[in-house]
Image (cartoon, rainbow, N blue to C red; front, side, top):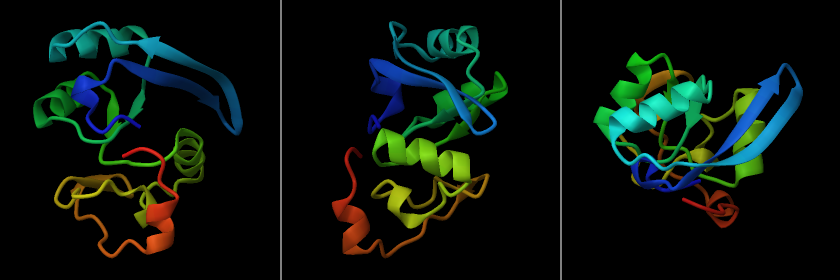
Length: 128
């Protein structure tokens, strides 16, 4: 997971249908301005964006374009995808360090993050 979506040079597009993963591919993001990023993600048909930090302006623009943004997520790609599919991204091991005040939790943007990550969950992180 890129720590800051606004600066990401690429994203991993995962298409899911029920329990099946239909596609997984890397997509290069050439756009650096919010308007262009929103347009690019819309053209790709993205419905949900799971990311680390994201600026408030870009998040708002994406949400206004109908893209659900799940920010402040941290962890290995496969673990994050599996947690999304299970509906468990609100677990502490996926909380980005310093996320309090902007944490997505259980579908509620802006909910407070959970403090007190244990050492085991910190050790298992791959990218934050």
